[in-house]
Amino acid sequence: RAKESGRDRFQFYTPCMREAEPQRLTLLEDMRVGLERGEFRLDYQPQIDLETGRITGVEALVRWDHPELGTLMPGAFIPLAEDSGLITNLGQWVMWEACRQNKEWAEAGLPPVRVGVNVSARQFREENFIDQVREALKMTGLNPANLELEITESLIIQNKSHAVPVMQELRSLGVKLAIDDFGTGYSSLSALGSFPLTKLKIDRTFISMMDTQTQQRFIARAIVSLGHDMGLSVIAEGVETAEQLELLKSFGCDEAQGYHLGRPMPAESIAQMLMCPAAVAPGKAVHAG
Ligand code: C2E
Ligand code: MG
Ligand code: MG
Ligand code: MG
Image (cartoon, rainbow, N blue to C red; front, top):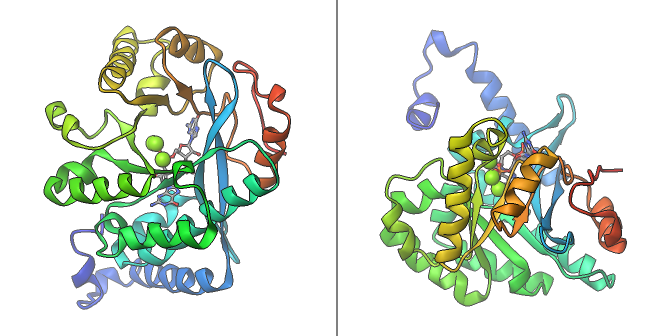
């Protein structure tokens, strides 16, 4: 990917790049403009408590309603935002909007939920990242306990000496810290204990193969035990079938998230789900709109 060569690519404009590069630059410029014009929005995917069947949280997932290209998913622009540094602005907007929305639900008298916000590596490394989080909480008045930051294993492993104090400070603000896509990027499990985490999110690759592959089932079950032994809460992502859900329940997994339980949906649909919790029995598929 462009990450390694990012800096040089804009300086050395060789003929072979003429095809791809203007597109990249255009999309980047579009993103700058789009941020100002408010073309970005958040969908929210429910996270369900496996004991009660209630929504306990939602994950904020960014979408870009591009004026010409239509709705773009994060995979189509997050890497570019990371490479260019624009992730700082985008990430700050996402953090603020997610907190604002969650506060709005609370003020409407709906049952309190956590909102999960994905934090990219570059954003996490920003010098003022903690200030960004503090500011978003202060400006919106959201209870810090209802904000959960999702970071990846590789992010904290790459630079442990930087990550640990940042994470500690975030925890002292009162926010929760989840490891996203757990099990995909880990080199040394022994290091896990040194991070002040609150939750593990089992990566969807283990969940999707659980029905058919006994090995994946063992891994998912082991991650649940590992998480619990370490005093962490465990959520499974990418739950698509009733069978997967039943297995996870039998493992004692705390929460689940996935198409089987609810797709990413607009804030209004979440408000509706929060209003009538009976609609969210595990095993019953919930759809947006
Ligand atoms: P993620 O954080 O692991 O988010 C889960 C992704 O899996 C989402 O894709 C979600 O729509 C999808 N998903 C949920 N349930 C299922 C399921 O049952 N089956 C399948 N196949 N997929 C499911 P999405 O929205 O395209 O986001 C992709 C990735 O983009 C996210 O992965 C996250 O890493 C990143 N991302 C999304 N929003 C943001 C953001 O605001 N900031 C940053 N830095 N990254 C973001
Ligand atoms: Mg995530
Ligand atoms: Mg994930
Ligand atoms: Mg994932």
